[in-house]
Length: 512
Image (cartoon, rainbow, N blue to C red):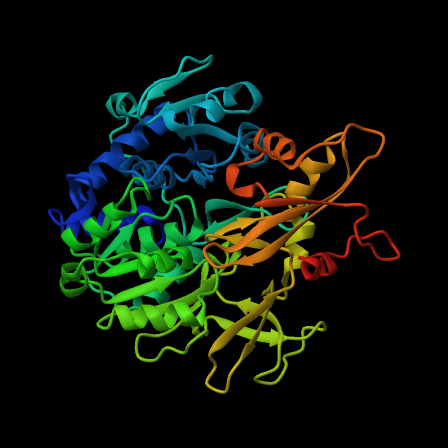
């Protein structure tokens, strides 16, 4: 695969040279051109250097969708530092673990999340916190983003040039056991997604992507943010997913051509009473779905509603930068995740990593430039996941005679709710810390609106006070993000276990 750039900064500099006045970002009533964006990135890069951030240092983002997110992202990689985008729905303890594990030096955050982020300097290696909106009342070194942009520097030009094989982004993704792991993505990893996606979607400089899904997510970051920049197009940034009517309004008014979403969004579009003029006058030529599987019913209803656009379902994972496959514009297959992107190889294999015949179910393994460099500071986990260049996904699937791929099930216990990963072990470990809980098991149950929802089964400790479902949920909310809280909590006299004491989650799912 041929790559036109060595790093992300070269990409935005080339756009500013070729199309200086073209609008790159639409956000609220503001427009930001390619040249204006480049100048802002240069200013923030100067601040980072002034603050002592060096090549390979880590800069974390805990902020909502915003121009500041993009400015900080490109400025960080411009000086050869590594960006760490973090889920902005987590709690203090969760942030503390990730920031310490990644060895983050500088944090950029928002007052919206100050309850969980303002005291992070006390528990981490962070020396400076930059706030995109207003300063909190907190100990440590804090300053506003706009102040950082105005800090003068004696260094006129930053000459750090990152090569395509160097670490660019650290995306934290939890496994089914233990703490979150940082997937190390190089510039080449992500550029392989951009080159392949550009070809698969037949992108042009006229295309406009809408960005309302959270930018910290690898799917949003690579496909909805970096891809339009790579193609010389534009993006429409929506700071918040609510109200949903604003997404519809901006899609129409800003003439969005590529709409990316998760199944929950597409189910909402089907249920919504869309005005006739939106259906007639929207400019969308392709809908792209990722995060979890679309149901056949959703696909049929959606295609009946939007006759002029193509619904392209795809598949990916953070460890693959993240896109692996997607249906082509020319031919889509219902319930298929499509064909691998150019130059990626996907096999369906048995337990011995031997490829199985077409139509037979096995584990998906992937090889190509999309496969991550490895897990940050986790050599054993890396060796278990990447074998001879092939990444084991843990997902079960099959392939048809034309090479189209289908996801059948997941080997792992991973729960995907509204496109967000939820890891049962993490919830279980918090539950086990409660004095009244003797044993706990969290499983994912299919849900029409969310894809899946987590539910918990509890075996109580008879020697401690009885606890209610409500009390346990209150306890969990003190330690976990809201989206991880089980929808229902059920109490059993004894959890089903095998001979070695392992909880039989399959039995619990059948019980539900």
